[in-house]
Each structure stands twice: as structure tokens, then as C-alpha cells.
Image 1 (cartoon, protein in one colour):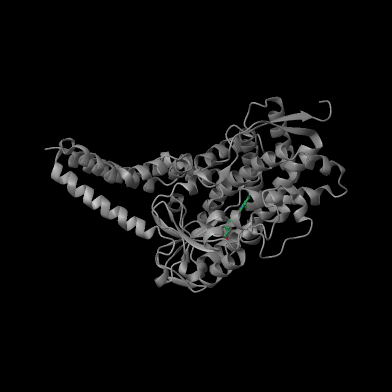
Image 2 (image 1 turned 90 degrees about the vertical axis):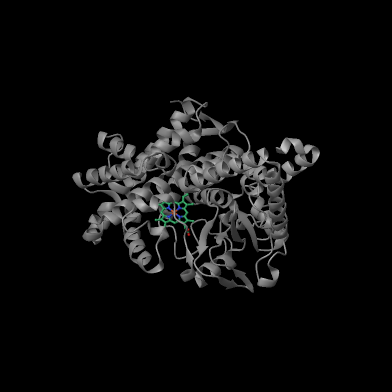
Length: 488
Ligand code: HEM
């Protein structure tokens, strides 16, 4: 006898059996989660394996009515247990923060205001499920800073899969002691003098990106900006001459290390790509950040552990994060074009451009700091068990109306005087502070000033914001029309 022979009862049992799997499938089907899984191959494979196994069990059970019944009972128990954990007060007696641990919640992947709304409901520290992993969220900068400082030894940064290709590991994921030495070398490398000396090249390349965009408004701003940002950053990091065959070859190697692409590449090819990039660096005169590092510490400048870190930082921060920031700048300025006019009239255009970049980072691109507990920790009378994720919700902290009135409005004048230490943390809030802040700010200012100098901007297409693998980003339909202000 199969499940079909059970009639209406069998149908009802089917609903009970499929309830949780269907909810998982709906969440997994969201664009944001699909994009994220592209960079986490092991998780994606584990989910695919679990889905195939689950589907197999359901099909087999459907062929034998007693099994179907048993599966329905197990599923009903699982639903009851999940409903119990989904209560906001679940675990209160054990000191867990308030908030729902319902599995695979949909809203974090579809609603950019999810974390802020949860904080309004449950308070600044709450719990949720990051798909299936329990996660404590903190939507208060002072509490977030204090949590990261006090529990530093009990926290790890969950690594991206690329970590295994970096000798001795990627700096951000290191334990506090080795981190100190490695991040000091990198800070020495990312010298302000190199960035300042490279400004004319950054400006020239961004001008070229804007003129391409002006010539063809059907192109996505990101597509025009990304190649120039990679060229400029390759120059700043290693001194390559933009447009030279050496630079082109090196950029292609760096582009292959992008987490999204690396997923599809067998590990031996990633290792070969890293080795080719190191060979090319060894064969050419040192320049940029690498030369600045060699001037102070020759050993560090030869150390593959430092060099591979620099390759990945070039790929992920100096290319991906900076391109994200510049794309958001075009989006906010297309929404609020009057700021370009104000910039043209301003007696202090650099300061105003800086404020425009900081306001853009308040609203977008800088979103969260994530850690995982190695041990259970206590904080503010609450308990975060071992193995939980902890998310300091920077994007949502930056949208607290008691600190930034009318938080959704783009108002660079907020940054005419520096915000207090408890208000703003676009570049980190722990010992893992961003060593590229100066460089990122320079790119941002350069784009804003070049836009103001050369163009009037208007939106030519748009849609709702979308979740990329790491951050919310403007819609893929976002386009701008740039009208040149002076005859060519
Ligand atoms: C829009 C641009 C950028 C933003 C919003 C940004 C933001 C951040 C944040 C929030 C952190 C701390 C992460 C954590 O605590 O887990 C960080 C770390 C870091 N950033 Fe950036 N960043 C940007 C660009 C850059 C650039 C251009 C570089 C290149 C030099 C860079 C290099 C680094 C490094 C090396 C770290 C790790 C530092 C350490 O482990 O000590 N970032 N960044």
C-alpha cells in the first residue's frame, strides 16, 4: 500500500512532511542566498546532499504507507520542536537573547531592514537563525565594540574557503597573536604616501570609466568601474603601469582569485594562479605598496605569506569592496544630484566629497562584522553558547534614528563634524581595523570630484536593491545617464 492509498489522511500527512523542506527550498531559492552559496562550495554541496537525501527518503516513504505514516509523525515532532524554538522567549531561563530561532527564515535574504526591525522588536541584542546556524545579533555600536573587545580570545572570524590557499592563513582570520605581526606588516605596506602619489592615476582611470559610462548609458555603472578599479589598485599595490601588457596579465590572474570564480576552479588551478602571480611579481621591479614594505622590512616583502595576503586583499577589498562603494556613490548621487551642484559651488570641495563618501558608507556597502564563538560567552546578562555566530549589524547601527535623524535620507551634511565614537564604524570596530580606509576614501572622493567636474547625472533605470554574495547592492537594472558639462 502506498501513500496514495491513504486518501485525505495521506494528503494531510504529506503537507506535514513537506512543510519544513518547502520552507527551506523557498529560502534557498532567494537570489541573495543563491549568490552567497556560490562562494561557499562546501555548504552548497552539503545542502545539495541533504536535499537529495531528504527527497530520496520522501519518495521511498511515499511507496510504503507505514513508512509514510512514520515520517509524518517524525516531521510533526520536528515542526513542534521548531515552533518551540521559534518563540522569542525560547532559552530565556538559560540566558539566551530574545528572538526567534525558526529555521531558514526568509526575511534576512529578502528584506534589507530585517535586522533593524528585529532590534526594534526585541532590543539591541537578539537571536535568529542564519539559515540553520544560531546567530546573536548586536545593533548597538558601543555594545558591539565592547563585546568584540572583551571576548576577543573566545571569538574567531569564520573563514572564506580561500583561506586554505594562503600560506599561514588570511590575516583577518588569524588568532590575536599571529594577527598582530601580520597586520603590522600589511599596515606598513598600505602606506598613505603610495596612495597620495597614485592619486593622479586613480583620477585618470576613474575619468576614463565615467567617459565610457557617459558614452553608453545602457552599460551598468559597475561594469565600467570594476576594470578601472582593478587597474588602479594593481598599480597602487605593486606599481604596474596601467594598460601595460604586464599589468593586463597580472589583472587577469588577480581576477581569477575572485571567490565566486574560485568556487568553480579546481584547487590546483587556484594554486597555479597564485604561483604565476608570485612569479610575475618576483620578475619585475618592485613598486607601490610592495616597494614601501620592502623599504622597511625586506624579509616581509619576500614572504609568500605576506604576498598572497596582498593578492587576496587586492582582489576582495581593493577591487570588490571599492567597486561596490563607487557603484553605491553613483546610485546615491543619481538619487540626490543636487549634491554635485553643491560640490561645484563649495569652497571646500574635498571636505564635502569626503562627507558624501562617508554618508554613502553609512547607508550602504559597510554592513556587518561576523564572528563565531569558540567558547560560550556572557555579555550584559545574556549568554551566547559555543559555536554560535555573532553579527555586529553595522548597516542597521548606522540607521538608528536616535543617532542619525531621518536615517534613510542621504544627508552628507551629517558628516560636516565627525560623528561620535558610538555612532559610526564603516571600517571596523575591533582590533581587525581596515588598513585600506585611506585608500578607499581616496577612490570615493576621486569619483565624486570627477563626476562633479565633468557631468550632470540622472537615473536611467533602476529596481529594488539586491543581495549579492556579501552585501546589498543596487539593482542590476540600475543605470545612469551622464551628460558632459563641457564640450568634449
Ligand atoms: C569600501 C571600502 C572598504 C570597506 C567598507 C572596508 C571595511 C572593512 C571592515 C569593516 C573591516 C573589518 C572586518 C572585521 O572586523 O571583520 C576591514 C578589514 C580590512 N580591510 Fe577593509 N574595507 C574597505 C576597503 C579596503 C581596502 C581598499 C583595503 C586595501 C588595502 C582594505 C584592507 C583591509 C584589511 C587588510 C583588513 C583586515 C585588517 C586586519 O585583519 O587587521 N580594505 N575592512
